[in-house]
Amino acid sequence: MPLTILITGCSSGIGAAMARELHRRGHQVYATARRPESLAPLADVGISTLPLDVNDDDSIAAAMAAVQEQAGHLDMLVNNAGYSQVGAVTDLSREALRGQYETNVISPVAVTRAAFPLLRAGASASSHATLVNVGSIVGLFTTPFAGAYCSSKAAVHSLSDAMRMELAPFGIRVVTVQPGGVRSSFGDHAEEAIYLPEGSPFTGIESGIRARAQAGQQDATPVDEFVVPVVDKMLRDRPPPFIRGGKNSTRLPLLKKLLPTRRFDALVAKVFGLDRFRPQ
Image (cartoon, rainbow, N blue to C red):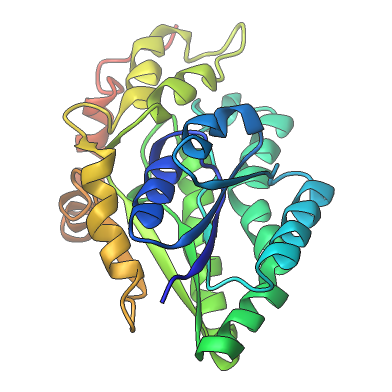
């Protein structure tokens, strides 16, 4: 039976690939993004598209009203929209840190809250609905120059854990997707979001900061190859609470778990040049 599914952040990458795969399987997909023109390739293949800025409550409400009018319910909501703020934690302005948390942490909750009546209607019609929150394996361990992003994804994981228990009585299952390295334009967007203010004490290690922006893109898993098995698991009658996929999605969290903290810190610091950095 076709499901009605809304996905945020579908302009490219995982969101767009997930929309295409779910549409290919015959489901009614609402692909959304802040810039409607970015959704044209999805609309061209018959996918329904809606403008949805996850940081704008009016935009969220308008998207949900459109789904209510057209479908009357949601069987699945996928909170995928997000970005990576790159830079040393002590370099980040209050605005930069707030922006990262607004988009990656607060907005998924706001979208879920607005979609809650639609998800309840979906659960009533078919005994269950599904909420999918896209986190990251870096929510399980932290790297230099991505403290804001890593901590935002750790917060997503924690909020998902809470909602998994809270929403169960309503027949809403909660799944957390934790991607590893997935080939997409995410690294390019991270490059654009590098925060290195003039006079930063980290100016001498700009190459390491840029390396962090591109981390996960080297030999990364092609996005379509990542999405197919993830969608398989999302659509199970009893989906797992956690789904991992992509390069190093198992190896790196395991290293974090097994290695002593100082050993893991030294290993990661070396990757981004902190072992050679001499502050001026």
